[in-house]
Amino acid sequence: MTYKTIVAVLSAAEDAGKVTDHALALARRMGGPANAHVIGIHAEAPVIVTLIAPMEYPDPNAVLQLQERAREQSRAVEQAFRSRCERDDISYEWRLFTGTAGYASAGIIDSARAGDIVLAGQFDPDLDGPAREDIEDLLYESGRPVYLVSNAPAGPEPVDRVLLAWNGSREATRAAFDALPFLTAAKEVEIFTIDPPDNNMQSADFCGAELAATLARHGVKISVASGSSAHHSVAETLNRRATDIDAGLIVMGAYSHSRLRQRLFGGVTSAMMRGARVPVLMSR
Image (tube, rainbow, N blue to C red; front, side, top):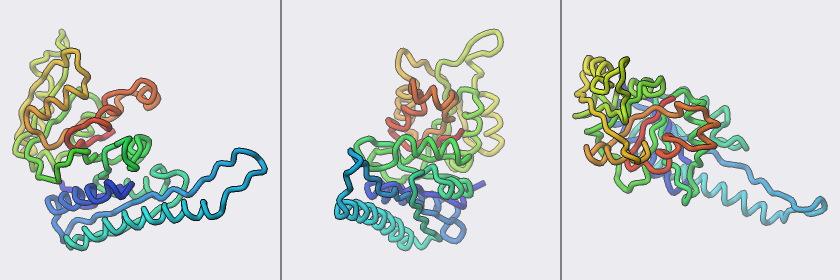
C-alpha cells in the first residue's frame, strides 16, 4: 500500500509552499514521479460586505479592492504550487473553488475523498491560513486521513520514527491502518498508550500488544510503551514523548468524542491541531 493520489489543501500564501513541499516529498517517497499525482486545492471565499443601516451602500471601489486581494492571494498560492510541481517534474493538477462554504464545499470534499491522503497546514491563529473549522470539515466529511504539516520550521525530512498514539478506539484503529505506508517505511514505530487501564479485564502491560503483532506481520518494526500523563494534558504528553524518541510523525485518531463536545470543551484533537511539534496524521 502506498499513497498515489495526494491532495494538498493550500489555504494561504504563507503555508502553500511548505504544504506543497511536504506533498511532493511524500509523492517521491511513496510513488515516484511516474506513479504519484498531486492535486492542489484552494478555496477562494467571495467578498461579503455587511451593511450597517438599510440605506447604506458599499463603496464599489472598496469591494473591487477586496475582490482583487482575494484573487491575488489565489494567484500567489497557485504560483507557489505550480512552480514546485514543475521543478520536481511530478504529475499534478490545480483546482480552484469559489463559494461561501469554503473547505466544506462539495467540490473540495469530493476531491479529498478521491485521494489517498489529504495534506493541510496546521491551524495557526496568527496566520491567514486554514481555520480550525476547515480542518474539522476535512476530518469529518472526507473519510480520508489528514496529514497536518506542523508550524515548526523543519522541512519534509524522511520519517524514520513514528509515534502511534493508541487508546483502543475505532478512530485510533483507523489511523493506525491509514498510516501503514509511513509505518512500513519507518525504521522504528512505537505504540504509545497514556494512562492505560489496569483491571480484571485488561492489563496495562499488554495494552497495544495485539495491534503490535498485527503490524509486525506487515513488516513494521514495532515496539510498545505506555506512560502517565502525570497531571499534564494528553496533547502535551504526546508532544513530549515524540520529542523523547525523536519521532518525525505522530499518528492518532481524531474526535473520539462528539464534534459539539469538542467545540464546547476542547479535546486532544483540537489541542494537537494547534500545538503539535511535528506533523500529525489524523483519521476518524
